[in-house]
Image (cartoon, rainbow, N blue to C red; front, side, top):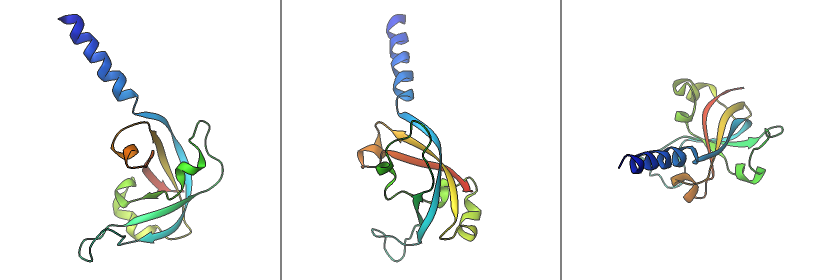
Length: 120
């Protein structure tokens, strides 16, 4: 019984570690900011900040095509309260990108998750 529990625990650890294959900081330029994007009604809106890559990608990063259509939302920033007032088109930001090998985001065609963003 103990062996089974040990094997199951090891599988859970390996599964958790296998979700992210690559992680690193990436520099982006803000190309546009939409306060209400398609799919939301006029009453319920969410802010999306669309991005383009700036400079070279860090070693081991996924292909540049993974970043096409990249966007973040205010809750992807370290200080969400400052984002609405400070981020503007043309600004550069740095985000932590993590490539997903499986899971909800990957199944929706988004193999890259951006988080912990800050002004460059």
